[in-house]
Length: 226
Image (cartoon, rainbow, N blue to C red; front, side, top):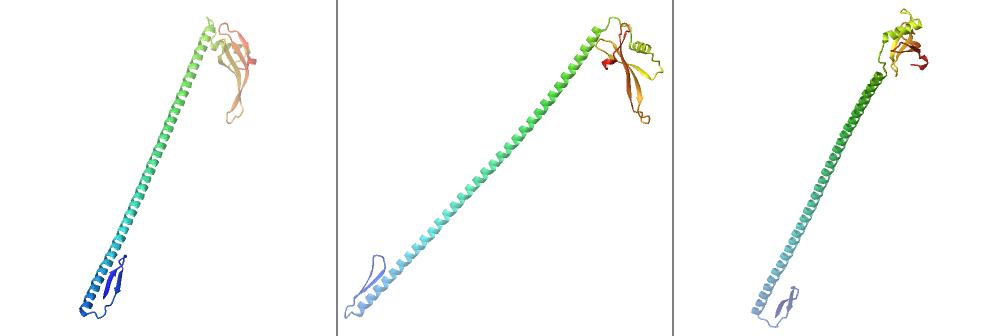
């Protein structure tokens, strides 16, 4: 008689013990047992294969999910970095714009201060000039004799008379200015033509004369070099 068994690993094992003089019924029964055991073995192998396939597909799905998660994480990190870069660039541009605006404002302020300083200097110079003119006028008024008996025209004529310069003389006699003491300064000179075609020339000074407005006294001051 034949026995059919499975070992610990589930492998099919046949142990056949033939019994002498087995009947046909016994043989048929044994064959049925073998077929049934073979069917059971086929079901186990199929289940094992299905389990392996399920495990394989599960592993694939797990790997796919991990890959998707890793990719999503990488994308998120890349987007976060890109956003950080955009923010940093925006802040940098804003800082540069602010710095440029501050420099422009500082330049405008400096220009205004410079303009104000120049205007102030001009005002001070104008005020000083006016003050000097007033002082000169006051000094002249203080130094001017109480009674001025000789005018500018008379002073010119006095010099002409003293130097013997007639009206038709080539020598010119003109009032030039008042000196610090209030005396008339008369300039005697000759106009010399250097180029008759163009009329260009120069003046040749003959002398400088100081005339007192109070008494008409004449003093030769040519050496003073007015």
